[in-house]
Length: 324
Image 1 (cartoon, rainbow, N blue to C red):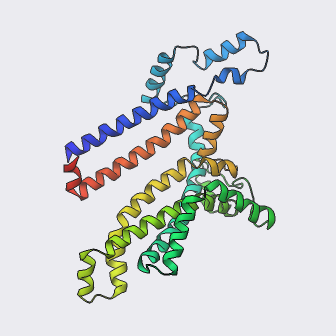
Image 2 (cartoon, one colour):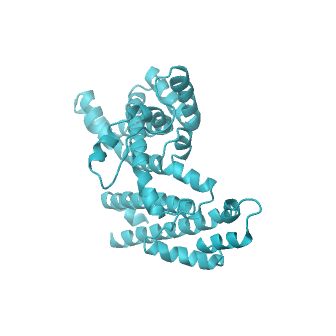
């Protein structure tokens, strides 16, 4: 087990290093942020001063080494646009993305898991066809299109829900009185972006739940339970559902991380001030530190979650750790 864990740690560190290096190079291919900041005919000395202040006057390898050294101390740099630490801005926006991500996650689970179960239990019936249709539509129709349709119908035509923004509630880290009100207010603002984001993932949940349930229901274990005369409801709830939850929960955990960290399009459409909107603004303004910080933090969460999942798999099933 120690050797398996050591290998997982090494793989995770290599993945993070590749992510950091790639994003460092990619943002510099987007263009010169100093030229973008300066107006036409701006004084060259003024632009040179900005370049020195941002550290862009250094050779590329020097910028890379400085960037890596700062990361090892937990310093993600200062935003070019806002002149504030990237970590401060990121954690101010993170609660908004968590609120949106958790709401979308609940929608995907409440829609995807029961429908996937019904589809598996009633093969070749209406419920099976309905599950397949939801899975196909969920994976085929992009979230931005769903969001635009929702805005047109419920925001513009019917006027039932606000179209843009997240409402007046705010999460302030040093003020505990804001913590509860933040989570339980402004649901009218949250409804449409949460559904638009959760819709795609509900299709994936239907497919994985249906496949896992069909595999378990066809196993010798379930056949033996049925031969013992156990009521069908107990077979489904106690034995089949429990054993089919492992792939479902694994996918659900990864989906939640993706919803929180990379909901860029949905956040932009609904002007939701989360991490995705922050990434979009950073790319639009060529704010190198901001883009690097958001991508690295998102990647870090995903790498840590994968490490935890791999560790649990290795602990639960010895064949996995012996095969790697």
